[in-house]
Image (cartoon, rainbow, N blue to C red; front, side):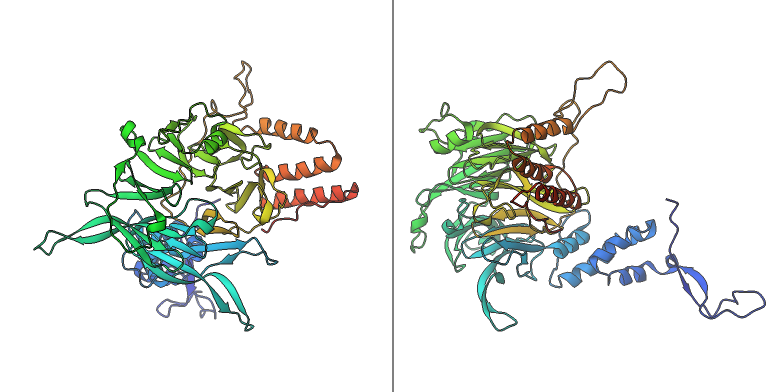
Length: 576
């Protein structure tokens, strides 16, 4: 490409002389005038009326427009158009640009598993929301937390359609549940029927010393009924304690609330959910969790929990486990040798080859993603929910070699989902495990390996969640937060041969040759031609190909299968 020049526009200027000597200026022609001659404020004002997508595209045309389209003045005007009630731009290097893109890309999408209609729907978008940070579906509704600390209550309701019919719609109305929220949680089980209460970690102003007008901020936990949004309980902590995350673990009668402080310490308290709706006041005891008491040098960065287990990730990428029941312990580790029923809070360290960035915790299996973008699965594999290509349980973290650099990972009761991004920046959703009830769209029989699901994924999808009735995807692009994956050194890559003495020795840093050999062995193990065709279709879904290429191979395999007299027909091409 040659050097990009400054943009020009043509206009007729009365003060300029004729364009051709000895003649009058021809009609429709004028002297070229550079846009750079316009005042910068005027150019920014004009650009601010463009859609966000066009502003980004215009900034990629030349160096001049890149500087103009990246100016905070442009994004401040765009942000006020998208969110007129937004008063503060937030923090960061590009606060107004970040705020504008957060509000432009925000959205909650869902696809119901039952019924005849299989399409992706979008929920109502609260105008007051400043981007979407987290969401949680409950039995009847959906709760969304934005970047300004406002928690929204998206209700399901009966509405009338354009044809005058009354139909049930998900997340079609919204109200503000509370403000100043930091985090929220509910029953950690996958079935939303158990999510009766919503626990909100928030900051509230409390009156100071008696006789003074000063106040101070204190963290508290407020409990709301998910069905109506009514607050039924509140716990306020000392102003010296500041928390950033809350998770739940245990049964309703012995519900343990785990609170993570800003310093990386874990505190816990126990409540009885069956008595929360009774109007009374009592004191609960806040105690330091054993993982912080026995390992005081650890600084926990985040937590994940389920009904019978808790997982901690430290700031150094280490992983520690708490397992509270022998059945889940056996599923996760394959043995009961180190399980102590009298000391269930004793943390267990997982042996991992690299720093862990984030995780997903199911009932009896889990997924981990390290700093190189590798996915490790562990636990029960009865339905193939580990994505290893078989149904053998794994008692230690096992790498899924054909998947790398995921955007999000989710583990359910007996299936797993991975949100990934292709080479053309398109998003796709992969799933494995049990496919009953339509939880793996396009694969009703399930799969022991991750396959591409037949669902249209939003361009800016960043997180996902699956319930018994519906699949949810949250869309919100934060320009300052993205997975900081590192390139895997050649010495750690699976499938890299030993260095040879000869010049030009080839290497396989991505493990492609090893993966292809594994695919061929799986195809060879199939007894019939039809089984080999079906296995080949699964392998095409595993391979890191573009969507159009996968559709081509699937269609070609269908043609070969029909020509060979196959009765079954493979999966239809996914939506692009």
